[in-house]
Every structure is written in C-alpha cells, then in structure tokens.
Length: 236
Image 1: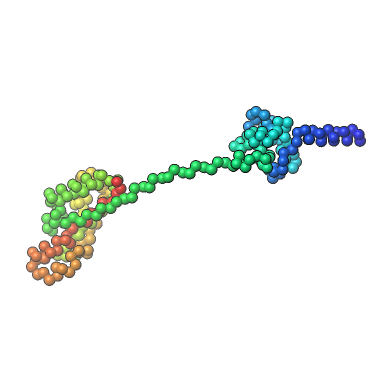
Image 2: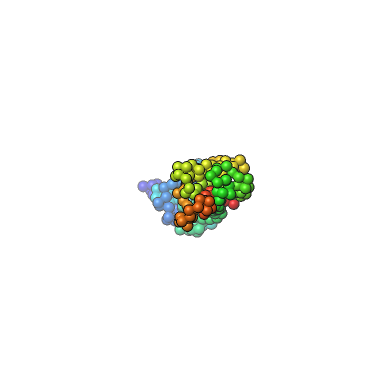
C-alpha cells in the first residue's frame, strides 16, 4: 500500500514538473505536427506529433513558455494556437488575408460605323457590277476595316420599287454579294462579311415620289432607295 502511494506521488510530481497546457485544446482531435526545429515546448513522439492527455491537453516540456508556444511552428501556425489558444495572440493563428486581385482592364467595347452607300455610286443603274468610283469607295472601307479588330461587316442591298418584287430581291442580293467579293479581294476575311438583300421592302423615300409620272424624274426621285448599307463592327 505504501509502495503504491509512493508511486502515485511520483507520477503527480512528474506531471507537475512537465505541466499540462491551458484549456482550449479539448475539442482538438487532429494531430498537431511540429516542425521539429529548435527547442520544442511540447512533448512529441517519433512522428513529431504533440503528445496529449486523454482529455486532449498538450503535454508541456521544460522548455515551455508563452514565447516558445508562440514561435514553435506546427505547419503554418505556432503549435500554441492548438495547445494554448488562450495564451497565443489571435493574429498569429489566422492566415493573412489574400491580397485583393489586381483590377482587370475592361475589354475594349466594339464600335459600329454604319455607312449608307448610294447604289448609283457603286453600280450602274439596274446593274450589279462595281463601277470604278464604287471600287474606290470600297477601298477606303477595306482600309478602315484593317485598322480594327474586326468582328463583322454587314452589307445589305436595297432597290427602289421599279420592277417586280422577285427581280428587285435578286438584284439587291447580287449587289450585296458584289460588295463582299470586292472586300475579300482587298484582304478582308470572307467569314467576317455577312450579306443580305432586302429588295424594295425598306425604302427611305416614303411617299414623296408618288405623284411623279415621268419615268426619268421618278428614277431620279427614288435614287435614295437604291443603296447598300454597310456596317463595320469591331474594336480599336
């Protein structure tokens, strides 16, 4: 009985000399692995894992001090963050905030330039073959497109109301196609050019020519309806 009591007293003395960490680690279940460098304030095993009591408290060594608990690392943070959270400064146990991402420069907004080209400038009357002055006009348009990060060129042909619907539709399509063919010959990518014919369906003259009976005068009055609308869309 005396021997057993003496043994218990020795164990208590050993515990008192080593000491337990302050409360705060009871809920810890994950191993605390220290780096194993310098004077380590906690008892560790061969794996550098901090030894803990059945209640989850870390065993302190004779090297323990508040400073040592705050400097001996267990991964990213001091070992004391897990073993002595009430002693180690809170800011040492929190990962630094990630730097704010660098501002991203906004993407350039596409610009859209819409040009109305008089069909009579590009083609002879009732024709879809480009005239010299028409080619010169499209040369300038192609040069403009080369200065952009081109997205698309829209070429839409229109006619006046003279002639049948089907004829005017086909004529407007041929004129738009002629514009595309010429622009491609000047280096514009074919898949960047969209063509469409609207025939006589979208006049811009309204009813101002309705009372003109002379054909030559009527053709002249309806001139604004004979056009190719070209829209260049891209960013600089």
